[in-house]
Length: 146
Picture 1 (tube, rainbow, N blue to C red):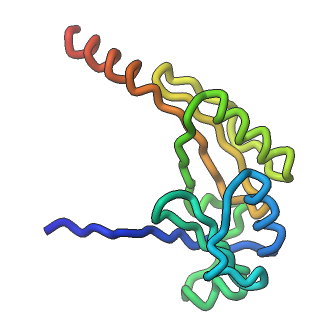
Picture 2 (picture 1 turned 120 degrees about the horizontal axis):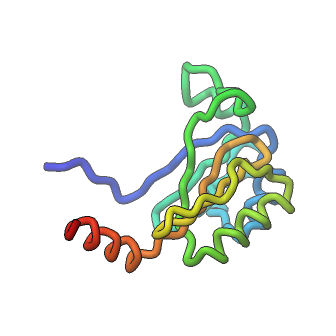
């Protein structure tokens, strides 16, 4: 039987939980206040059963024996989120920058897929993308006929 899970939690270290909460609230996200104390941890709701635990760095260290990565030098992971349109991708990234985030990449247009990235105030990489499945399927049909 394949391993499945009903929920996913991604843990990210942050320097200031309140600052991170303000940033993500400004982007339109909400928090599950049952798992949020604004000093050590905040439970960012990404979608149905998808969460990012924003853990103050010292508290984060209690969950692992490994060093916390320096996000100025290393990408611990990239969080990729789907948007409803190209315009929404631009809106989210521009809003993130206006709230103190930094651009991570230039916009990339792959025809069927459009994506753009930013770094949150703690340097974690967020890629926002839109995929037009009708264009993707049309391209797949064209490649199958070639």
